[in-house]
Amino acid sequence: MRATCLSLLLLASFSSFATGQATPAGCWAGTVAGVPAPRRAILQLVPGNGTYSARLIMLVRSVEIDSVADLVVRGDSLSFRAPGMSGAPSFSGRFTGDTLAGLMQTTGPRPATAFSFARVRDLSPPTRLAGHWFGWLTQGDAGVMRLGLSILPAPCGQLLVTMDSPDQGSNTMPVTSLATAGDSLFFEMSYIRGAFRGGLVGDSLVGPWTQNGATLSLRLGRRDSAVTSTRRPQEPVPPFPYTEENVSYANSADGTRLAGTLTMPPGSGPFPAVLLVTGSGAQDRNEAIMGHKPFMVIADYLTRRDIAVLRVDDRGVGGSGGNTLTATISDNAGDALAGVEFLRHHAKVDSARVGLIGHSEGGWVAPLAATRSSHIAYIVLLAGPAVTGEQIRYAQDSVLALASGASAAMVSANHKISLAMHQALKAQPNDSLAVTAMLGAADEAYHHLTPAEKAAVDTSQLMADSAGLRQRLQILTTPWYRYLLVYDPVPSLRALQVPLLALFGERDLQVPPKQSVPAMELATAGRRNVTIRVFPGLNHLFQHARTGLVAEYARIDETISPEVLKVIGDWILALSRN
Image (cartoon, rainbow, N blue to C red; front, side):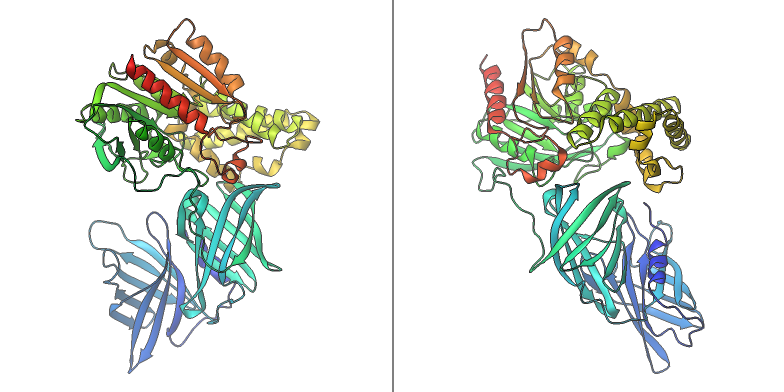
């Protein structure tokens, strides 16, 4: 969802607006467009001695009051500068009844962006909503993620609303539009394509949370203070018995700058070294997910065993340049090779003993990288798929749905619709036309379902004007997904010449071992330096799990099985001794 005037329209729907005001004095609240998201703001105009003074109040992570300079109010027009804001922007706009709208221009070559404000009539904030809230985002009866909201009074009867996601290590995330009516609350966070619409039910704040077209339930209770990120038991804390250094280097193929953390054992070395390769999506160097930091735990364990470890932010994440959604598996393999070269030229690293550990999608990236270089000594795959992206997508849809209690009819219907949509995507290279083609394919597939399958499908998700569905389909047209969909890892697995350790979790529902293990065994048949192992009771993150569902990850304190850590460390060190 991109910056629009939606916030202004929402404010209008909850307020009483009049026209033809004699004076612009008072409070005006709305949004200022920006990158990566709009920002909520208040303009307060105070009359005095035939002129006006003003202050600009930004409601982002906190209440920030900026000075206003060169204020001119003449008739229905207004202009001023905000020298305290980044870029020292100039504002110019026009009053139309209870609306103030115009453009903001910063110094430099950036184009002007819009601002839209509405007159604030009620200067008393909805105090029953104010406070700190904490609870669970749920799907069915399963808790998916813990969330917190801080709703604090702000000037001119407004509210400052920020969200905390301790399971993702994210705090004070701002909302980009807000509307209230009595005990009801609506807000958007456009930069994550999320929105909440709910209200007070007894002592709880309850309502649906929608994100990227999916809808989950959010129920929050009051607490005395804001939520802070929680540390899992295996997450290491300093002081460390090794050195930790922030590093950066470039992928020479396209110049993309990558940033990460290098942990180095004590002593002069030279040490064996490993580069950690993340799974799908925009992952940071710790591969943070659901309150866990698996790559930080792996790096700590291996470095304590005298193995140097480099973990790196994905493109477009943290300190790394580029864009995750435009980077393909091939691009990521190039990034991995750049990391290998960085390690090989480090004074304390044994250049002949540098390997890769790839998790999930990183299990595609690592073998591909190894076929492009003679400088990779070994590979460890953690839940590395051995089938195409399309095959694993269908397997995921099936096993996740069945484990969540879906009927066989629903699983069958979803598969037929998904198959038709992917065929349309592969047949249409134009992204905009592909979205329309996929919608048409879904509708056509629905009409050919059996009566039982039709009854199991939520037909609202097949409507061509479904905004949520269109958002999801746009992600499917990105270079990342298009490449992943048709990528076949088998040729790279067959071409591998280096030792391979491939580990799977029995309860992994994202890379089901029953699908990938036989394919990997076939692709590596006859090789003596290949070890493939399935761990009972472990999920996709290699946690001891009850169901393997994604919703369970956050509820498990364990980040990664100690047995898996030991197997990885023992295997790498055994290779180093040979």
